[in-house]
Image (cartoon, rainbow, N blue to C red; front, side, top):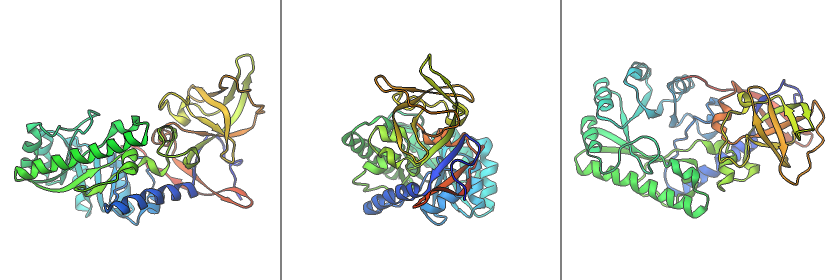
Length: 361
């Protein structure tokens, strides 16, 4: 029997029961709204975890490496939700020859012309909240791009929903996301463009949506693991976080109030999330959060744990193993080549599998 006390640290841990619970929660919600889910696998980057969501159904990816790996695993309906570089179209065409429908994303006339010439399906990115790429609803380029493609879809992503800190704000973000997507589709149809896809999604808005009239699919990815950012805005609770990193105490600096661990930003990433939890909260090996203890600093292979004001620094001898709960699951997972999968039984927590993680672009 292998436990969290056995592998060399640091290593990424996935709690299988929490993953399944998180997946079931969103699946039930979108099923109730009558819209299919096209999960975004950019967070998990694991065919083993994706199989828990559905059996080779439609997915969203953020890299062509993901698309190729999931095609190898039998997935044939893939949306590449990052603006397409025409230089990458030969890789897209190679997947098409394998029988994979890989739909690309674009927001310019130049991209549309290249994609149309290559015979690759595409959807148009529409900017719904001033966050990142996409054309606006009233931009003449929306219709121009649509006419070049002839048949297309629209995709929006409410990136600013990650800063919506109340249920009401998240619900309004979900409504706005839907309204923009539907309006963009209506404008294209009014111009004679065939629109087959109206795609919306982010983890906060997917959970907050109550009406998806006019939408054909929902995308979300972080929800499988969740993280401190999602817990911080109330989309989940701390006990829902399914990803953590096991580290070991390797030193003490009592004059500074520091405990030193062997996991730095190479194990956790440099993502500070909302800035309130340092580089992550600290839990014991059972997953119970240690009150007031935070990973406050990170160098390449060292982390520093400190206590918040008024909380005594716990006695953690050298060799003590801990779990760090990450700010941003996508960024933390990206530091690792795979996940040690744990299950909880009456006799304790055991590592039952190691799931590979896709890397590269």
